[in-house]
Length: 92
Image (cartoon, rainbow, N blue to C red; front, side, top):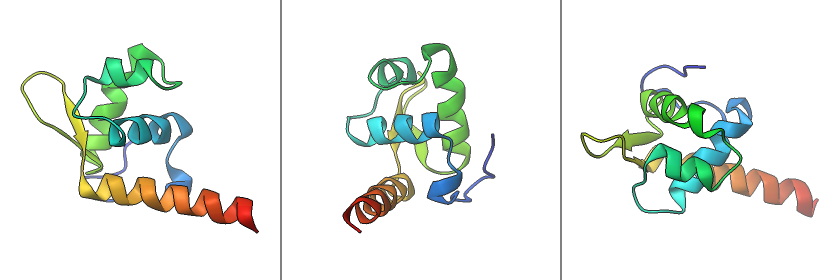
């Protein structure tokens, strides 16, 4: 699934695996996709492609020639919004 360059997807439309990968990357320093995938329920074989899609959406950015990614401000905002939505749903 591609989201379009610089178009932030609504939190509800982000696939669960992408959301988990984004959350994991937000909690760590810049990381290889496969290492981040090993910390969340994302198949390691899919991790690089998912990071490329998240980068195309402006939610993560590649920080070196090697495939190392970090979360952008937009990505952090999406993670925070998703967490706020989940918290509100459980506190109602």
